[in-house]
Image (tube, rainbow, N blue to C red; front, top):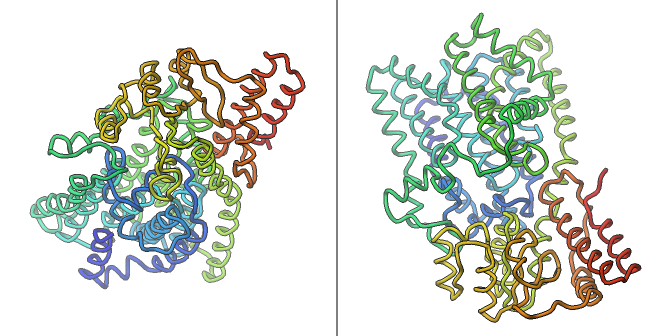
Length: 585
C-alpha cells in the first residue's frame, strides 16, 4: 500500500500545479467508482485465484509464481477494513485500486488531448464495463495492473504531470512496481519507452539513470518473498536464483508460458479477444477507438504521430499478440482464464475512444447537460452488467467447497484436482476455521517437492503423482480416504463409491456398499448441503462447476441403482441429477 501511496502523492507534491491540471475531475470520478465497486464487492470466494488472494490477504504468504508481492502486501496493509468476511475485506481493498485506476485513466485521457467530457465518458465506460466491474470488486491482481498501466499512459504523455528527471524517476518506479504485481504490464512498454525518451530530451542522459534507479526501488517488494513463509505460502524462496526462478515463473515453463490446455489455433483466441474487447466497449466505441488510432497516426492531434503509433503497438501487444499465446479454448471455463487478460487492451483503447468521443460530443453547447446524459447512459450500461456479475458472485462455489468439507468424516484425507476446491479449501480451513481436521491435498501440486515436503512435515508422506501408489500411501495411514472422480487412474486400482462430490476409496479386498446403501448415504449428505441460492447457469464458471459435480455424483449413483436392477430408485436419482444441474436459461 505504501508504495502506491508514495508514487501517487509524490507526483502531486513534486508538481502541484501540473498535477491539478492533469487530474481535472479524475478524483471525483475515482470516488464515484469506489462507491460502485465497494457496493458490488464480493463477500464470497468465487474462483481459485480469488480464493488464494483472499487467504493471503488474511494470513500473508507467497502467491503462485510470479508471487505478486506488491498486491499481497497491499491486501495485508488493508486487512483492517471492516469487511463482512475476509474475502469481502480483500475485495474492498481491491476496489480502492480499481477506483484509483479509473481516476488516473481519466487524467491520462486528458493528457492525450481529450476534453473533459470525452475523457469522463471514456473513463466511466471503461470502469462500468462487465469485466472491470468484476475484477475491480474481488480479490485479484488486475485492478492494480490497471492502475500501473494507466499511470504509464499518464506519465508518458507530452502533457503529463511531470517532466525531465521527475518523469523518468516516476516511470521507472511505476515500471518496477508493476513488475512486482503482474508481468503483463510490460505490454505497455512502447508507451513507457516513449516517456523515457521524452524525459531524456528534457533532462539529458541523467534520465536513464533515474529510470533504472526508480525501477530498482519499485522491485523491492520482491524481498517480501524471502520472508513470506507460512501455512499457505507457495513454494520456497531462499536464494537469489530461487527468487529469479519464481519471478520468471519457471514452474509454469517461463514468463511467457501458460499452463497446458487444449490444442487451439491461435486465430481462435485472437478473435475471441477482439470480441471481448468490442463487447466490453459496447461495439461502436471500440470500432471508433480503433479507427481513431489510424486517424491520429495519419493526422496527429493532442499527441505526436510516434506517440499514437506506440499506443497502437501497445494495444496490439496487450490484445491480439498476448491472446495468440493462449493454448486454452476461450469458451466455458476457458473464457474465465483468457478474459482476465483482456482488460489491459481495453484500458489502452480508452485513449483513442476518448479522442473519438471528443470529435462526437466536443461541439455540444451545454456541457453540463451532456455530462448528465453521459452519466445516465453509463449507469444504464453498468446496470446491464449486474445480472451477470451477480451470477459470477454466486455463493455456489464457496458453498460447494464447504459442503465437500462438511460431508467428510473426522480426520479424513481428500485429494482434489481443481483450483476452486484446492484454494477454496485452504481459505475455508485456514481463514474461516472450517474442518481443519481434514487433510485436503491438491493433486496438481504433488509433483512439486516443496508441497510434498510440507505434507511430510505433518506426517503425511506421498508420492509425486496421483496414480495407484498415492492410494496405497494414503490408505496405509488408516484414515478415511476420498479422491476426486477425475483421478481415474488411481480409482481403477481400488474399490470405491460416490460420497458427496468425491469418491471414497476402500482398501484392497474391501467391497463397496450395496447401491441402495450408497444412495441412502448420499441422500443424508445432500440433505445437509447448503443449496439455498439461485441455481447458476451453464456459463456461470465455477458456480456452474459446483453444480456439475453435484449432478455428476447422482448420475453415477443412478447408474449403480440401474445396474442393481432397482429401476424406480434409479429414475429418482436421475431426476435428482436433473434438478441439481445448472440451468439452461
